[in-house]
Image (tube, rainbow, N blue to C red):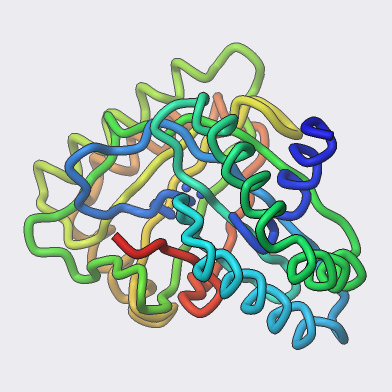
Length: 262
């Protein structure tokens, strides 16, 4: 029964899970930074998105009512819903499983119909686990945008599929970017992570946030002007490690995210 619930959790946390962002681990000022992140991506049928969103909100309400202790962030791009739960250790996955079993025993009658609705709306789902590369994390002294879990915002994620054996080399590139950002005091935040269990490995992602996509474009232009030729040289060096790049233009959706009361 426990293994079945664990599988249910991994597939069902579409309503329950990071990164960024940082979760995706979005860049935020925390005293003790999480070291890992668990992700779930759900592709939802377009005509069922409103129903899916309502089911997620109902699921979150049940979690809040039962005081589920783990938070998750929700990011959306068209019909893709990405859930991110940040972890201080990989042992937290077992703790989440135990808490979910308690929740299921307490509110199973409420949860099952909601879970069924999310399953019926989703076309496919996938999961991933990874580490947060906090050593490359950058938050400006005076950020143009400060991530607030209660407010929706724009989050752009660059997902790098690397050639085998080049992960450490690419981390060196991230180190150079992080140092350059600090030196030039750029106004945009940066959070990085590595996917260690999932599809299409090795992968590293880099994410930044802004209030809107338009604001992000303006900030990016300003950052490029500030870092200049030094960044061009770093980019050139990075190309030999990168097999493929995907850019995710996500909206952090506060209304679908869950943060337990402290």
